[in-house]
Picture 1 (cartoon, rainbow, N blue to C red):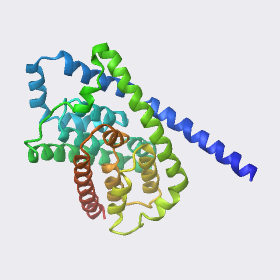
Picture 2 (spheres, rainbow, N blue to C red; picture 1 turned 90 degrees about the horizontal axis):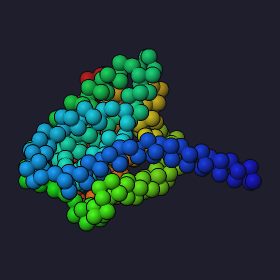
Picture 3 (cartoon, rainbow, N blue to C red; picture 1 turned 90 degrees about the vertical axis):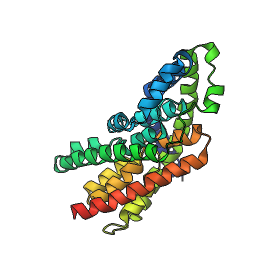
Picture 4 (cartoon, rainbow, N blue to C red; picture 1 turned 120 degrees about the vertical axis):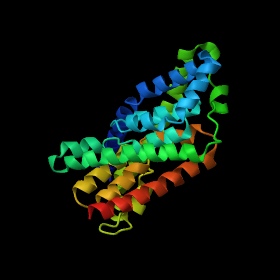
Length: 285
């Protein structure tokens, strides 16, 4: 019993260390995003803000290109820029859809699967741009404004840097706590997740797209390893990675007050991911 307890404690400490290290990688992105938001909101002229909003309708293009870089910090930064009224919801979705996390690196590292890394990058960029632009086109009346809760709690009277630092610390603590819980569940329930993914079934993309909503890099790593072990089809891998936006969705749930909009975003992403996954499976069969 004592050995089991010691082993459990050792495993939890290892998970905590891994969680903190991964979360520390997000700090530069968090601070930079909050600094930009504070600067634009309180230092830019109204004319400059209007220019940003007009350009924002086509922001899905750079958003998807930045999102494909193997670093989930971009999705977190994009959430903060959206909350600050700097980018549109369509741009945020483009970043979410294209975010690749560690999957691209893992596929590149394995010579036998490196070609699929190029396929993945191409599919995710095209999907992010196309459906990010489409979302903004459909939601023409969706105004790009600074979130009320964010602005009320900006502490900007104490200076832009201090306000950005305050926001960064607050969200960082939340990310560490949430990631720790998620990583524990992933560590101890990973086999169960693998078993429910229905190897060889055309329904597989429906499940991977759903599991993909679990925040963090652990899911993208698991999906990549299952794909290289031939447990997942490429379309199922794509479906799961399209919904997996690193820690971005988790931060959006924490910071954005309009939960119905978040549910709408998730439904939109899920449908896109499943359709792309099924069609890709048909293409690669």
